[in-house]
Amino acid sequence: MNKAPKKGLNYKLILLTVVFGAIVLVPIIMKVKSSNPDFVVTKEKITRADLVGFKSKVDVMVAKYTVRHDGKMPIVHMPPGSDVYLLSKNYDWGQFTLELEQGEKYRLHLATLDMAHAIVVRELRLMNRIKVGEFKVIEFSPSTAGTFDLICGQFCGSGHGGMVGKMIITEKAATHTAASGS
Ligand SMILES: [Cu+2]
Image (tube, rainbow, N blue to C red; front, side, top):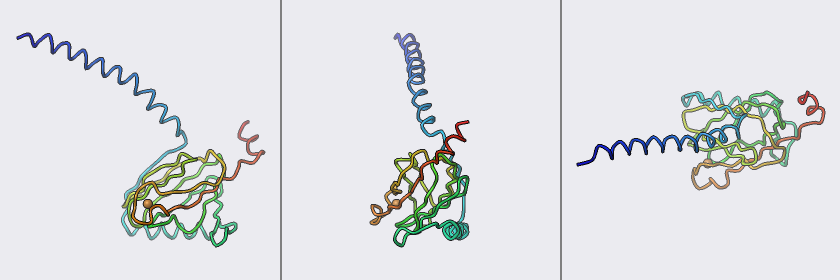
């Protein structure tokens, strides 16, 4: 039987596949990473009791930073560099609308009260799962100004489709642009 030479050929093929695979995949991975340069995600394991503290942080934030109302909905304008708290649950993101400033940095703290959800703001390329028993912090900088839908990207029951909030990103002031450009 002449299996030995065949084996040698297979190893070469495997090696070639790996090398070509790397040549094709590495730029794709680099591109995906560079498309979200401002997103840094960290996780922390929690117990149900930790959610009580989280909930009160949300309440404090809404009480402190509500600047106006849209109908009954409080608009919560967060100062640059601040900690932002979002507690997802069936079927809302808290009864308020977040307002952030374009180009500024925020630490977005996420948790879920009941089951897995996912935060999705397409225009900001913000997409992340929120699991039970976990706090997640996303450090990010909103790149685009506008009013965007904050939707759930993880099917969570009958109200999933209506689990829609809003996120407002205010345009960077002209003076700001000049300052950060120098
Ligand atoms: Cu959901």
